[in-house]
Image 1 (tube, one colour):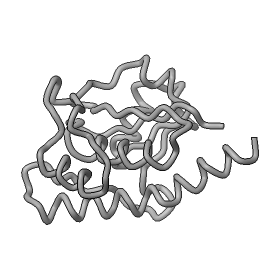
Image 2 (cartoon, rainbow, N blue to C red; image 1 turned 45 degrees about the horizontal axis):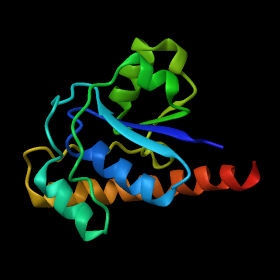
Image 3 (cartoon, one colour; image 1 turned 60 degrees about the horizontal axis):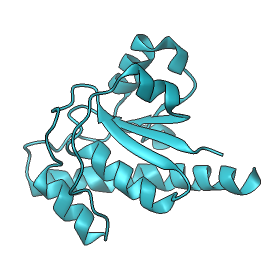
Image 4 (tube, rainbow, N blue to C red; image 1 turned 90 degrees about the vertical axis):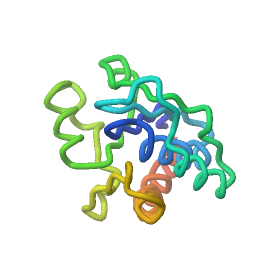
Length: 148
């Protein structure tokens, strides 16, 4: 069973907080957290991200951006990134992480576009990509919980 999941993006104020909120809602038995490779340390989630998640009944209003560190990688059983470059960066910095770091869009071969400072349409498009990628991951994570 996967009980500790880490979601990673760049600034940790848009994509990964939204993805972590959705994932935590669908896999309540797991601890889900989000961090950024270049986190906007101490910043709250972007207001558009908070609004879009509130519309789905999920609160990320208390989220505070955190920077990725070795302890995050060590404790996570699964690490989901928004892009291939983020996955590659993590694997280069933390060689031991290979085999547990995947792109959110891994199964359909896509990166999740960064909506930061690009307006509502960009946030909605990014969230749609996150939901698309998570659909498969949620099914896989939940199937492992049932079979173990």
